[in-house]
Length: 293
Image 1 (cartoon, rainbow, N blue to C red):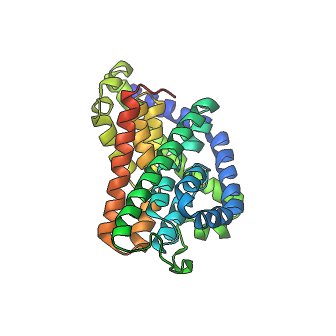
Image 2 (cartoon, rainbow, N blue to C red; image 1 turned 45 degrees about the vertical axis):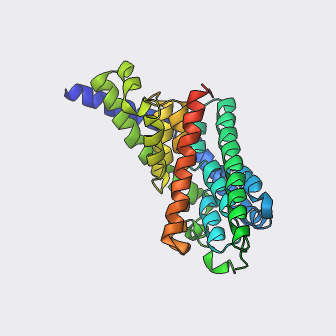
Image 3 (spheres, one colour; image 1 turned 90 degrees about the vertical axis):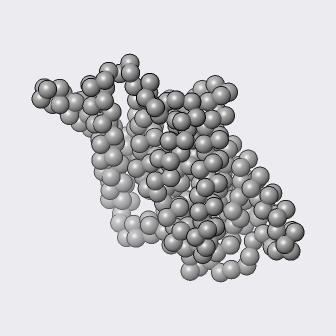
């Protein structure tokens, strides 16, 4: 018994240690992009107008830590549309990208997953905005109100500007390493207890149920959601459909900023609900079509 526990701990620690160098370099790149592109990215989204979902879905896929939070602030100030906001949420990769890179997932696989997220975000954003425009025309209202944005432009990464790029990347790496170790430890423990061949029969891999559960995990408003979903996929516990549902719904801290900054709890809950439904529906369709990455 204790030998098995010790073996699980050692194997998990070794697997985690191996990815430290590449994970740190991935976050170093993300910090660089965050500091040199975030202002330009935000400005571009602000000026995108009716093309917001197109621009938002493309820029959301760029590895920037706080873009979903910035998008929430822009929406709270009615600078961008709800379709643009959802496009950013759906396409943002959060912690998925650095984990994939550190685990040396083939570049083609990563690009196909990002492409699916961008496609879903773009299409869903355009459809939501179309519906919003049709509804607001009947009410004689503008789609985007002219409200000052300055007071809203804060997110959880703002204080990190005081840290150097190396220290900030190290902090991010250590936090994610902790989550990776925890998730891997649980998975390795399950493998030791029930056998690797039985993992595929878990409830999270059942048709539709897997997407519904993965979408709920994606709603967790921090890095834990994308770490759990990504690790479950890499370990072969879930397939492409549930993985896509969880990663599409996972908007990082974007939802936290939305509920903090945007007036109207009912509207915020509606946005979170639409995000969940889109992510789950997309995952189910991907599963039914037998899409592989």
